[in-house]
Image 1 (cartoon, rainbow, N blue to C red):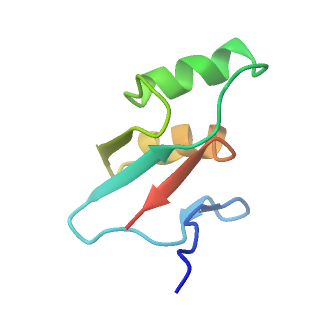
Image 2: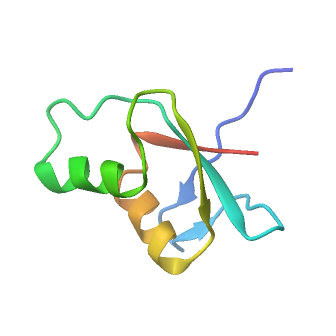
Length: 78
């Protein structure tokens, strides 16, 4: 069974799927080469150091906003 990508719903700014423990697992999947500086800083602000890295962040409005800003560069894991 293929894995489905979990992303933000852009219209409602709500998570399509979220973990019950109050944390989100986020994976950086696309390079930010050619992206504006503020997107690069957002990726770094989420705690990413390298591509394909998986980080766990608290499920807060601030984190959701950062994910929404770079939704095309990251994926939400289960």
